Length: 433
Length: 69
Picture 1: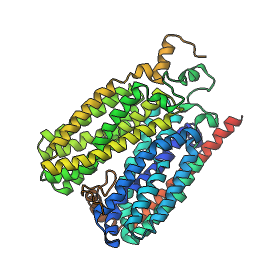
Picture 2 (picture 1 turned 30 degrees about the vertical axis):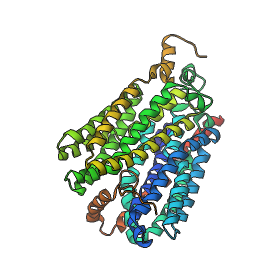
Picture 3 (picture 1 turned 90 degrees about the vertical axis):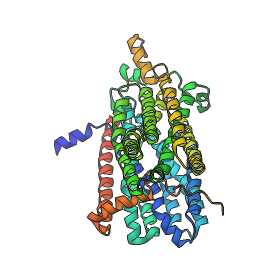
Picture 4 (picture 1 turned 180 degrees about the horizontal axis):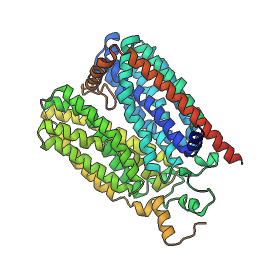
């Protein structure tokens, strides 16, 4: 027991925050993705159509995307702890309202406006920015561990919601979410999350003394560090990362919505299509951790470009290979590149622009990701309706991903990133103190 | 009312209804009505919550002690 105590005490406190927020993200993503479970229940109870219910989901996606930069700005101003606490509390309240809705109009208002807006306080933007402030050298793997919670949330909690709905009905299941936010998410955030390592006398990664030359060197601001987020708009890396991230949103959103439908259109059973998608989600989690580990060791832009390149190959397989082969090949290749772009883009944003405005900037890139994805999902559906095939859509995505690959590779990370700046200064003997 | 094309916009994220029904069909073989699954997962969530908070608070107290020294 004594050795256990000693071992526990040697773990950097930032890792407790990572695991705590990964758990909160797991719950939050599970609750949000349970929307699909309730569609049939709402359809029957409110005597409405799936299309009408879809409006609530669509409004929610737009609202969540637009809210991301504002939440980012709020974190930069007030710190992430208070935003996370308010976000969890208000989202819990939103689910309480959802459990009482009388018809589909209230669904559109409560889900589309209230929950989607308040859930921004515990969104990927907020948790990644929180973790970015606690890590520097191990930022990549910390982000990946954090996001693995999001990947698992859908796979585990959605079946949980499905069972719970069968047993106690959808309204009490939603009240179960209220309990998850009130009794799990809020206590975890309250007890664990601190705004920054400096607030408790630590340094990022927990390596070295805060006054040591090595730590001071490591904490030097990157050349493009911005005090006002607007300044970043005048620099190339922000646009490079954002443009590539829009393509990321386009490719993942199209697959999320159209993959199983594509499989059916190619004569593959929906069960097989769904099974392949399950494999994709499973591969995603393990590769996410590998990419995070690698990103702390090699240039993140190289990995980011490679991730987009691999995803382009996956989409190409859907077009050129026989459907059955394409289905499984994409599940493995696509799964390997699915969420990996998120920790890489968030880390690069923090590396290049520093931590002062990283919330707003990450929020802006996430907004571009969400809105680009939402628009192209609709376009892809329209093209399929017109041509009867997804080939043109997937070829378009391949071209966009290849462009995103080259854009990512062209980011001058060694010139602008804080971590290479420091290494170069150490090599040339610059005394940062 | 304004209608949207039915392109599975009714779900969010990677879990679509077909995948969910497939996962359910596997879990049903082990958990029947699902009550056991719900109870086990609820207990796991509680245990993990208490575990994370307990370990995190202990680490935070230690950090605070070191900081005050």
